Length: 252
Image (cartoon, rainbow, N blue to C red; front, side, top):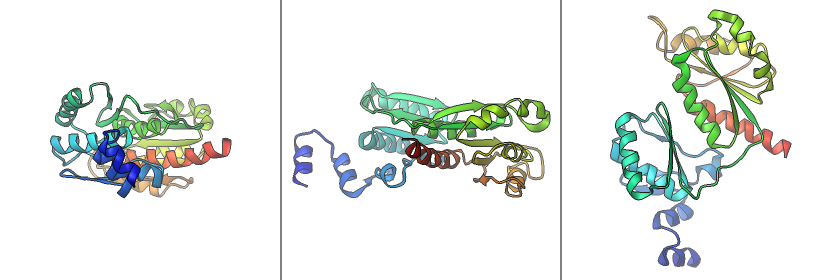
């Protein structure tokens, strides 16, 4: 305790970092950031930007950077992304900002990314599925896994699915995102002995076009797979990371 107080006094760590070390979380006007989730759960807390103001998103991201060396944000809109870039240009100009659709990762210059000896295959049925797959991919890359991405191979043309079977089988775990009737994960799962995580996507026409039909189809799959909620790319990525960590430990 004394060493921690002395570190705060001499400026080698910030009060927020000290609070994170003592309590596991940091409290601010924007909310509480769970700085210890990585150590406790193996997955960092992601800042869910939807419904938050730009100022709240910036405050939480700066807290994440200060206490963990990186910030992972999902469902970020253009206004929030612009505010984040502007704020970091002043407070931490050397921070690296990566954005894929609505998912953003920010790395402090001193952050050392981890490495996992595991490959996650990420598969999409069509272009509309890519933002959800991007969310999963950023989570996997953040954990240090290798990602093999295969896009736009929906079952409307089964030949383009079957052409990629060798890549599917080479992966340690697969995330398969699809909308409409959600058949792609079932087809892929029937071709591999790899764990498959199915992600229903909010796309389609009319009845069930909000992702409901895809979710129902995946839940009723006659081949074994796991299913996350509609558009839950982060959850799929997190599950794949936990599997990848177990594989990495076994290989090491």
